[in-house]
Length: 266
Image 1 (cartoon, rainbow, N blue to C red):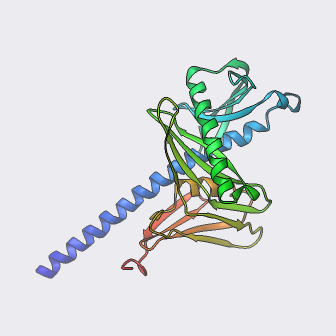
Image 2 (cartoon, rainbow, N blue to C red):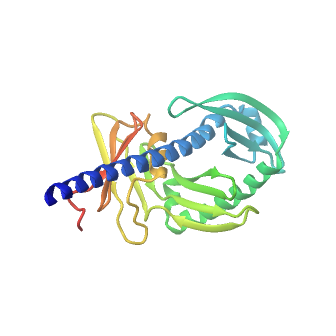
Image 3 (cartoon, one colour):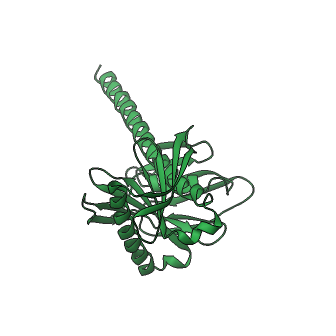
């Protein structure tokens, strides 16, 4: 009777553990998709600006207004949008452009976002220079949330063809007045993967080191892998932690997190 009771408890604990991991994986996946859509809007909108107008643009930023993604290309005065593109989410991860506007003033909220983005760009460039990353990647700034404080992520964009840059990412939080509150490295370093263009490809990296140890694949990993999924043949990307193994299938947009049974007691 006692053994039966212990067995029931063990089964219940295992089921609960599985449900928790399923919830965690879904949250990470959805967060990564949100970042991907944000960065994708920036990528796509750049191609819509006529060559004759590119000299009028001083920079850009993209944000989510709770319904759509807005990409703004501002002028040297930092007060007006030379172009403003609106994208709506559609399907599982896609976006579709709804409208284009030209030569309109930035709103108060957008001016606040611009202030934060400029600071985030400056900080990330300094960070990348410190570690020598600027030779192979550029920092891409993603304004993830704008209220009640600003949540900003920086992911690397490859300068070199056939490169998939994993890691080298930052998380910043800014106060409501646009002043920096906190900056953290998400990974310990930058891992430049070479993209394979044929055959079945399975890539992986480890999350280890007490200072920045992450138990699961990160939403920034998901974002990067989605951005490059059309350019490589990778079928699965595995992240190994001493407690958990994360398996992300970019083509299927599917994430599985399971216990690392071999190293769980380490």
